[in-house]
Image (cartoon, rainbow, N blue to C red; front, side, top):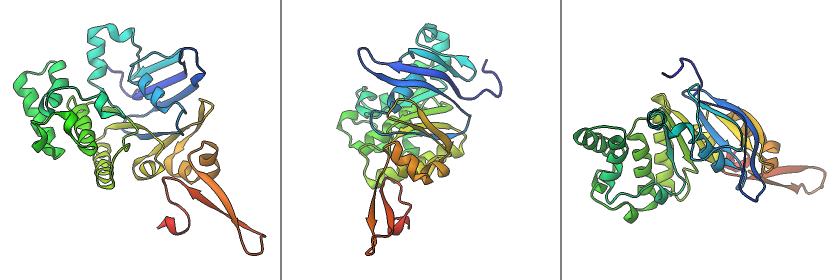
Length: 278
């Protein structure tokens, strides 16, 4: 059984290095409370995707320890079928590239795959698939092949597939990649709904706009493969010096006519200053 009151995730001294390469992560420690919406922020190459894959137990850290709901998890531990089913029913992962996640001949079969894998009868799995399709407004796609869908449609299907097993935790890798403004707005609304339903959401992103819209908390990874900051999302996003140091924004100064003062102008996903602050 899951120990009562344990955090959704606990990481202690987690490091990871790819073969014949520099460390992707170094001595990362934090906890994710149940029901939190947390953004993992960092520039490209900061190790966000690697960290998510470690949390989803797709690979093992080279050092450190990861616990989910109070139990240590690793690829070796999840070789046990019962423990794997326990973990996979509680933690869902939405890949950055939906094509890496969607592989069934039709959307209906995609939505049924997870429930069937976890032991639901075919009629129950089909019923759940159609309920999800209705809530995600993808009923018209049920007979379509996933590879023929648009980017926004694929993102909806991928998230619906993840939710088909009703996980308590949803891990998302760069969820806004390739989305048009309408699809991104839909995603933000859906994340608010999931958070209101008590889901724990952890998303890796370099989009400060997404973090500003949905996050309770932000964890910043730096180019040195370590944790740079961890705190309330608002405070993190207002710290321009921190964001620039983490290569999440670029600032430059424009002098006044008398050259005696300079104003910072930021180029970032979150608009906070000047006319962008509306």
